[in-house]
Amino acid sequence: MNVKVTASPDYTLVTVEGRIDTTTAAEFEKSIMEIIDGGCTKIILDCAALNYISSSGLRVFLIVQKKMMSIGGHFRLSSLQPGIKEIFDISGFSAIFKVYADHDAAIKG
Amino acid sequence: MDKEPITKILLVNNQIDELARVAEFLEELGDEWDLPMPLILSLNLVLEEALTNTILYGFDDENQHTITVDFSFDGEILGITLMDDGHEYDPTLKEDPDITLAAEDRQIGGLGIFLIKKTMDTVVYQRKENKNYLILTKKIKS
Image 1 (cartoon, each protein chain N blue to C red):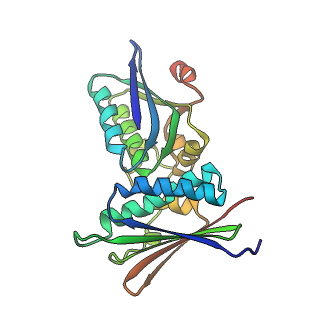
Image 2 (cartoon, rainbow over the protein chains, first blue to last red):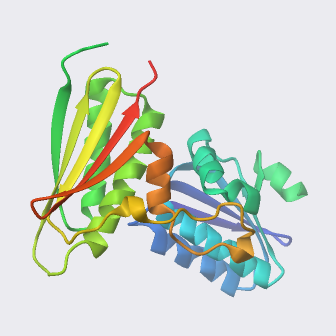
Image 3 (cartoon, rainbow over the protein chains, first blue to last red):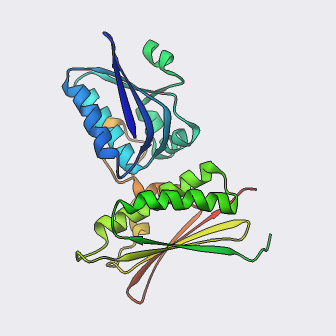
């Protein structure tokens, strides 16, 4: 798994590549929490290159969503691959996350 | 499609870093049995969820244990049976999470078994001779 962070004045774009699973979820959580602890309240997570997620990864997504809601920030997801979208649908996560077709759409909101 | 089933066995130690080897094994299995990549990723998810539970919570000692994962495919039904010698645990009894709740009310975690049930067509648990068997099947659309 790789995480790339691009900060701009209005939001932080996070690009995640590879797998968020039992072995990488903690590292992913740490990367995102560092961004939030750094004062960022708007995160767009580009998932175009995320090709696998398990319940360990979903757990982190939910933690981040709850955290962002509690500080009045927002957490938007873009470009989910079909397999990931399916897992979001099954888990009920499609209803609790703002998911956009691509990151331009996520910026517009 | 009443073909003689093909079978393959994977042995997994009770260590989390074994999951990387499981993922590799599944990719090879996909090539060999000509299974589509989205299905392989779904099966990877199922195995990760089942094995993570067993590896982290299934054993009451610090010893090395081997989990046997048995694959079979007759051209129509793919079967996966996981067998371990951990303490008795029937994951099928776990209550499903309420997926209609809003984010603030959703509990963190508890999705693993649910994802297995939703991905596979049948999920059966058996306890025989001090071993746990989790028997999973999925019909493969051709």
